[in-house]
Image 1: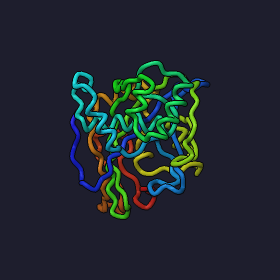
Image 2 (image 1 turned 135 degrees about the vertical axis):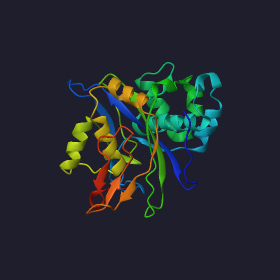
Image 3 (image 1 turned 120 degrees about the horizontal axis):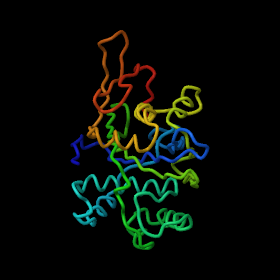
Length: 263
């Protein structure tokens, strides 16, 4: 998998869309978080856990043997490592890792990560290794907006917990709430005003709502090559629309500009 170049001012970011089986049965659920209103980007919005890629993530990527990287570039490995690190930091879930992992060790590793700010010493301390086969590339969004002081080039990944009996907790710094919900349920919450969604999150939820299982989501993700989605304003109609490409797997590719929340 190769990465596409973007403008130098874009901040690289990564996030994992975490699936789990619904404890009560029915549609699978994904983990969402509500960002603190003190955050510069997407304050008060419901998003998927994630954040910016740090230099240390790219440094750790260089330590991954080529035999483990496969056809992934160092840049892509760095993004996947960032997604793993951010997930542990923000939710307490140890995904994309292998070794002796249990609830107590996950809590302890998260505490250590908050101190070290980097994943490498955590892996060494707990004798863990990266297992990036758990991480499935799903999408890449680069929503340029001249009104924003920060523009993120974000890669989205899928991962599956399987069981529904998993404890998560917020970091109380960047996020104020974590909750499990089906993709359709999240869209309904947004329609009822219970949560707010920025444009990429809404489009991703609409895409996720197509799938009855993680296996279906993974199959589509693996069948459609990841392309960098750069929303465009279309003024050809009666009212301006914000649009995305039509061949990236999304069922809804346009929204009235006046209704769009863009972070």
